[in-house]
Amino acid sequence: MNKELARSLVDANMGRCNADLCLANVQVVDVYNKEIFKGDVFIKDGYFCSCGNSTIKADRYIDCGGKYLVPGFIDAHCHIESSHLSPSEFSDAVVPRGTTTVIADPHEICNVAGLDGLRYMIDSAKGAPLSIFYMFPSCVPATNFENAGAVLLRKDIETMIDDERILGLGEMMNFPGLFMADEKVLDKLEAAYSRKKNIDGHSPAVTDNGLDAYTAARITTDHECETVEDLHERVRRGMYVMLREGTACRNVLGLLPGVTKENSSRILFCTDDCQPQTIMTKGHLSNGVKLAIQNGLDPLYAISMASLNAATCYKLEDRGAIAPGLRADCFLTSSLENLDPEAVYIEGKLVAENGRILEKAPHAPLVGVAGKMNVKRLDIDIFKMKLTSDHVRVIRILPGGVVTGEDEAYIRRDKDGDFIHDENEDILKIAVIERHHGTGNVGLALIKGYGMKKGAVATSVAHDSHNIIVVGSSNEEMLCAVEELVKLGGGITVVKDGKLLGSLQHEIAGLMTDRPLDYVKEKLDELHEIAVREITDRTDIDPFMTLCFMALPVIPELKITDLGLFDVMKFSLVPVEKE
Image 1 (tube, rainbow, N blue to C red):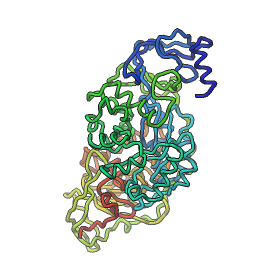
Image 2 (image 1 turned 60 degrees about the horizontal axis):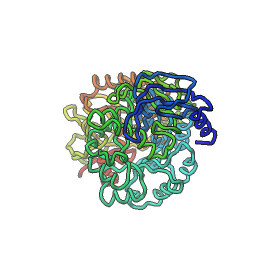
Image 3 (image 1 turned 45 degrees about the vertical axis):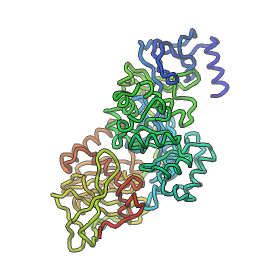
Image 4 (image 1 turned 30 degrees about the horizontal axis):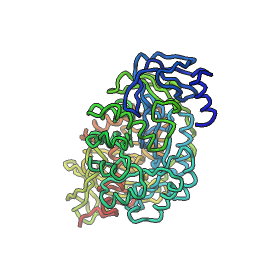
């Protein structure tokens, strides 16, 4: 708010000038009183100036026919990169679905391109109707047991954290470092403390004294709750808890029994990681909100959690409700149960109707984020294991999330100790190849539950350091998949019998493309069809999203990095061999 805007809003209300627009005959969702009232809503200079039964005038009137007017939704935590879309295309995708603001953590692209990645994300958001705020990534890299494209320390944070688009410090995944009061971790926290900015959390399975230590460090939020008890423990300690409904991670239904009228002001909605198929078929943030409503949550509380609560948590004082003096971010819908936006307004301007954006967002040049595939060597030998025992540790895929288990198995080896794949055993070789600095590092391990008989899948989307990850039935198939991936400059490749069956190029840091949502969804659908038809018999996992999380060494239990097999519970590298 500034003096001139205040003058304009006051003048409109006092009849000295007309409002720009009146959305007449609406049922306003009042997230403050948790009620609905009928009236007319006036908008001036992009802000609500009068809401109710005002007698002021407007230059333009739209009779909304008694539809509900809902505050624009605020996604409290997301990774735009997981949509495979540039920020511009992401805006075009989610705005028609009622999301008008997101708080994004760009640690994916920052793990590849450092500060250049963050600058690109900020530049790409300019001119988009969607308000895109960022949290400065706190963990680049996520651990010391992998090689990312950058290392960001306090001095790097302080170069950009004062930007108005940056609301604080991103998810603090390195809770072991915090528990040890590591100086570098505390320095990063101090960069946020000194500016009174938020710090996002990420604390799966952290309880008791550890959770006390975590919250004592003024970490504000958590989106990694698995149980109602997790939710209550965090709210009790003053945290905001996010109900997450994305593509791979979905816990709205699991946590919903823990939401009460008494604690609902501390509950937010987020998507975290959401792919195009989910956005187009189920919605964006609205997907989780609708799911909660359909399973018993009062729509007025659900909508408040998706708007006002997020605005309050992140100190976005100019939005989150329909009230005089706030940004006119809202949408019209005929049903509070289905919440399908029929018209979306941002700053009082109609930007989307009936699921389609009206004017596409401008795109930013790919400065500092293209051509990020620096692989030292590619030949068959890099995939050969030299195992000293048949008794091995195996990463076990657990459907429905990103947590994995640890299994053990007895496998066959050749004379040099390399793993021999057996089509009757659902165990495959998995590799992570460092792609940022040309180190030549290749981490090798074994994985169970992918369901592949023959072929290979490779991708440069491999959370969080985003090296190349590949799973396959043979060294030859794995090599072919990675060679095709490097030719693309990043993305996803599927091969079988040494032939490329399908691919999707990600020209932006190997993580995203500037292609439209419809194109990306079509290509991903095509790849999924190929995967199910040709290489895997598992239909209960996403073969691409599942693979990209196998390199995430901050989510239990076993993961793989370019340095080898990683035990998250021990927080150390472990040998593949059990003996």
